Length: 461
Ligand SMILES: Cc1ncc(COP(=O)(O)O)c(C=O)c1O
Image (cartoon, rainbow, N blue to C red):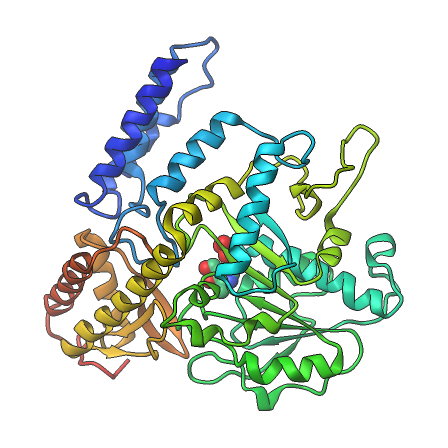
């Protein structure tokens, strides 16, 4: 096994070392070359080295440099070298990390990582937690716990009896709730559309004055970090009202929850610890490899009641935490190992520095682009920047030209009827020089557009 594993690790290191200087998007010829994978299933075995060679030679050039320092699309984050290395080692362990008695090492590491996460994110110390694939599933887990609790208080056992004939549950969301919350609600039988939607303001924050009167089993879904603007719902205004009405408050903080770990941004997360459940991603701002999301629930019993199973052949009885008692999956890889490695290596100060640096870099982008005459559409409070270059058509053309140039990559969005370039800074590897190079490339792309009716000035799109 040694030659193939050594070869793969050397190729991976070469790939990572090349990321800073290669074009961020794959070239059309690299994408066309993917046809080399389209071969019939081999009838017989071949040298494993040959498979890894093909994977690297054809696969690597066709990747988007998401792990590199100048990818600013979606909200992505790279992989801290220590978290990738831990992922490799834990991959070699190949632990089916559901039950403590079967995999004590990884179960122990997830327990420690959970304790540290609650500490840095300033959440209540006794919370239950689930290491899952991403914030979509984390939202699902937390809302399953919410469903269990609010219906339990109404005398209904939803895990046993389902939703047919159950007391109705009111679900309140902001107009800017992330679609993954809607999807989680749909998966839970609470309905993607059967919600009370509260109007939001210019930054996508829920207007607390527009909250409905709350009564009966109720779940309120708040957001920490709007996917476009980075804005936070007014938690401090909503939570006391929810408490009074006995409602469950869930917070989708896929990337925004990490503001709590950065002293200069912690004010944004003020009061979030008063909620009942939270979802976030580790593969975004903690910079661990995909796929890694986290659900936290104040009452661990509610999460466990929604998720745990037993069977005669499963060694579920233990004094220790079974990771699989809190997740939708039974068989699962030990995602918490990379989380543990990232947190141990960064420490509290390193984590804060990474988040503060990315937020300052978002501000730097905004200042450079505003200075060049382009319009910033959002209040840059966190790591998100929305830029208009003029008409929707002009903005689209600047985005296309920037992506084709390859210095950096940023995507398109529509924010309150305005077409915008969406810049998201969340990678450990991004330096201020990367931001300067990227801002130069964007400004160059915008200024190179031929003058004409589509290329009108800022503020007109
Ligand atoms: C606010 C918010 N919630 C949920 C998600 C979904 O996260 P994931 O793709 O990890 O499932 C995202 C992804 O960008 C997000 O920004």
